[in-house]
Length: 267
Image (cartoon, rainbow, N blue to C red; front, side):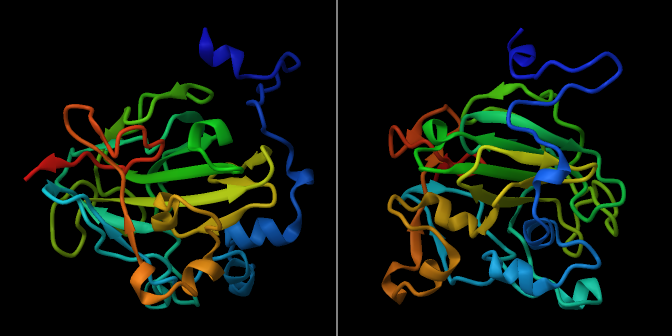
């Protein structure tokens, strides 16, 4: 079975590790705090790792109806968290049950029910350089599902594969209720690393040497993609052409390895 091929052998009674998964001792303290953002972590470490506003915005192909962002990358969440905090992704609202799709081919490395997390039900995919087209490892995070995705840890997924239905799960939310205040949406986040190694915690995935990426930057066709460079782009380059998949499976532009995590339709 394909899933089994991606699991490393383990001693009896010990959970098998996935390919690339390492113990927490391999993770340095700065990355653990900068990406994990624990309660005792200095938010400046996350900012140092790229969690700050860049001004990028999506530009969808003409003639298509696509789900846009309503909460932008790295906006202040301090008023929501009672401490200095920033939005570690982008949110796109959609009706309950709208399919969320894999942005690229990859492997499932994390699944969480998230009862005590603001993210709610969550899945994390890891994408190799061959799968993403970039010279580093990428992790895409999808949250707030209404039910747990059926894909298993270690399972390979195809670009555009349905991961599960849009919901509103997560701490502080009234689950699966369509309302203006607590609208169903996807929270989509991206991390990247030169290393293929990561640590799987009980509630999150943290790549070794991991950094934050504005998810809009993922759709740029040229390097670099780091937040400092993205913030410094001239105004005329702040709109990023987005590659998408249509409801019939067509990818626009053809051959794109990364697509928006919601299907688009012809308007």
